[in-house]
Length: 219
Picture 1 (spheres, rainbow, N blue to C red):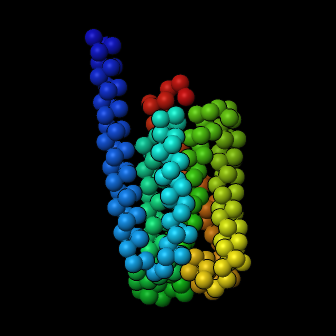
Picture 2: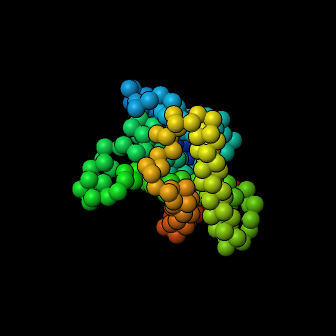
């Protein structure tokens, strides 16, 4: 009886996971198609959406060999949507954040800051899962430290990419950079990514542990 119950529960988990995977792909594709319909310009759109496309390919290639928790998949989808919205409008001209800028009399559209906060928050959970499940580091404190370092390194590398694109393409990269004249834009971007990684560990660490233990008890 117990074996049958466990088997049925496992089957329901697999079936539910299949439905969620299809829903994930559907949402991704719908937003991707929307973002590519008359964007601000296709050069900026491609640069902004490219990381989401790379993530999509990697997730499809690794789903069977290294399936992530639903938390990680959900956060990755949120990050992809942030990128695709930014690609459609450019980070400096997302309508909702234009309204926020005008209503609160701010100096700039801050949608890019949401993106950079996510750039630390979401990779932190993915990095944490990879490190924990592969038992790369056994001490929890060191795991948290390395996760924060990885998130900050990714943010810094993205800033290097922005610099390289600006050098190669010149003024055409202005919409991609999204600095809006803010002299400390690069430093504030990395600071927000750092903050995002710390917040992810603080608020989602226990939930993440429960999901990993339930889905991958021997991982």
